[in-house]
Length: 155
Image 1 (cartoon, rainbow, N blue to C red):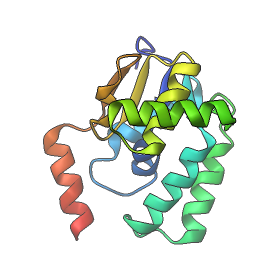
Image 2: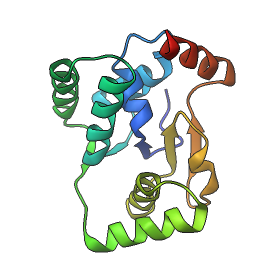
Image 3: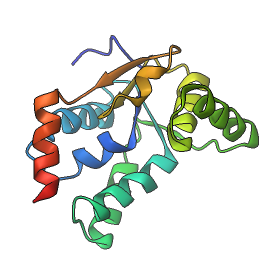
């Protein structure tokens, strides 16, 4: 995989999906592996790990202990740029992003982090980030794969 679209910001859904047994996880897992090895320039805000933990335990049925262990192991990846900024300015600007594009507060925050960190592409499983002009959005699942994921989650 080339880093032509990087640096990449990883959205919660991509991080969570990579840590599941879902049949459509391969794309997410490939990006996470490339981030871990340093083959792509990855930015991951620490709060995204809490979001991924919630998704793993609520939707994918992982135990609290299992989700915690998986994400703590992911945190050991030293090639990833772990973003730990949660300043008042970033939060305010994130709310401005959310308001201006009509997305949720967390997506506004991630968009602001992407802007502040010079991210070229946000990796995601939904289309909310397409509302932002400051970076590209790569939806890692095709519509067919997204449907397959929804079927998997309904079981």
